[in-house]
Amino acid sequence: MAITLHSIASKPGARTGTRRIGRGPGSGRGKTAGKGTKGQRSRTGGKTALKLKGMKQMLLSFPKNRGFRSRFAKDTVLRVSRLSALEEGVPVTMQVLQAAGLMRRGDRSVKIVAGGELKKKLTIAKGVTLSAGAKAEIERAGGTIA
Image (cartoon, rainbow, N blue to C red; front, side):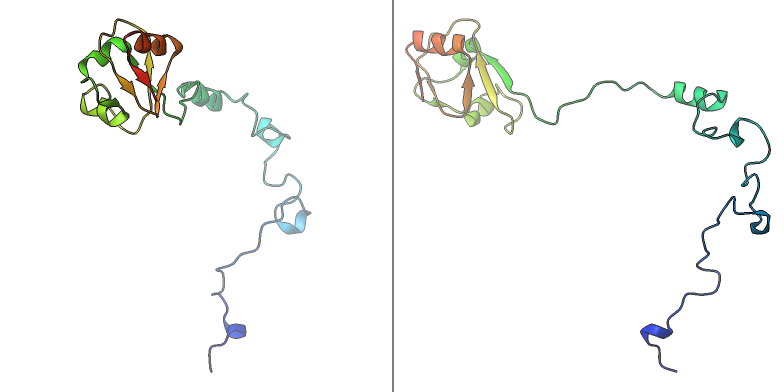
């Protein structure tokens, strides 16, 4: 006999029907519907309630992880005074800052904030964020912002 789609069947006992509980005494799961007699767990909402000591103790033992961690990377903050380690004339980019050891990771953005004194004329390239105070400090030193 050839195997065709209509002749394929699963083995006997492989697929059992869902047990319909609470459908009369003939079903074998009638009357109390497999919940036994009386008690908290036989009542409606009895299994989900946390009034059982064991369940409550288990939930209390879990660590309370509060808050969240943002999936967006924060800017690497640099003070203006740290830029004095850079050479004059070279445009300040993320790559230059990373090569100078002022940034740990190259994939994050950088923000230069006011703080300290700058005595070099630096050119800040695009892609480097500046605070208003840092912008004023760099322009006071004779630098430019692209």
